[in-house]
Image 1 (cartoon, rainbow, N blue to C red):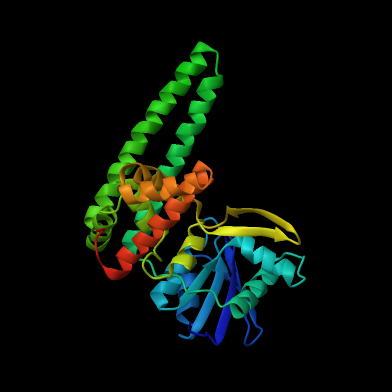
Image 2 (image 1 turned 90 degrees about the horizontal axis):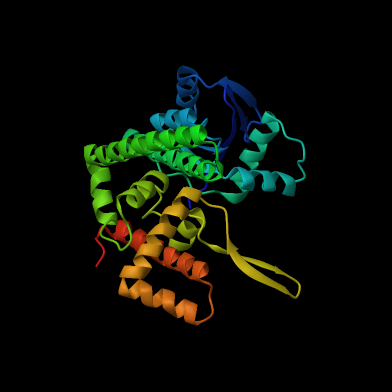
Amino acid sequence: MTLHQNILGVDVAKDWIDTCDLASGQAARIETTARALAAFASQLPKDMFVVFEASGGYERGLMEALEEAGIVYARLNPRQVREFARATGRLAKTDRIDARVLAEMGRALKPAPAASSNPARRRLADLVARRADLVAAITAETCRLAQAREVFIRRDIKSLIALLQRRRLVMEKEIAAQLRAAEDLGRLEARLRTAPGVGPLVAATLIAALPELGRMDRRQLASLAGLAPHASESGKHRGRRKVWGGRREVRRALYIAALVASRFNKDLRAFRDRLIDNGKPFKVAIIAVARKLLTILNAMIRDQRDYA
């Protein structure tokens, strides 16, 4: 892994970012307007490594400015950042403190640089995220419908569900159109869909939310996707390993793909059945299939080949 001599921690808020340069100890606050972020990124040394945490989308402008300026960055999980802060004895939380914690975390843990995105992939990610919002809204309204008793309210809920379902279909058509419009993404989708269980929406989710596919080893990728089993042991206690963390949307998509693949693909079905015969619960077996499927997909993209 490349060691970055200059590390800049950046805490991202809605209206500004706070920065901490480890080498000089200098701190600064910059507005999050496109012009201010572009000017900030263009003035950074080319060997600067910028570390920040995911902030619900507020980091998007910073990412675009850094990529335009050719600056390498890492986007970290907020929970891991907070745990690192506690581990180093920092219980207080301010924007300036968070920026320094991020810089120190970048120096101590040397996180892998994020894969650079492009406008087509970013738009696809927005479309996939919007579809997920619509699916969540449909689920919520369907639950409310099951509890509603008043006729007028039930009619109103049904009308809203129908509207949301139409908007979901529109979003799915736009996702397909985006994949067709971007030739490189279209080729990637076609290759992913040769694998068992991977349909158009699963492929779109992986392209949008897992750009590291094909660029990491299988263990790193499993952890990133939230499919790596984590031990729970202390003294004589041996708890059940659990998967947690990672990117929820990727884990959900791969779980769905694994359900389908383990039903219709003979190799993955045999793998699932062998785990169940050995006493593994059904869901644990499906997670294992999802992890195996992710390894297959990673090799496919890395080696530029379709599923055999």
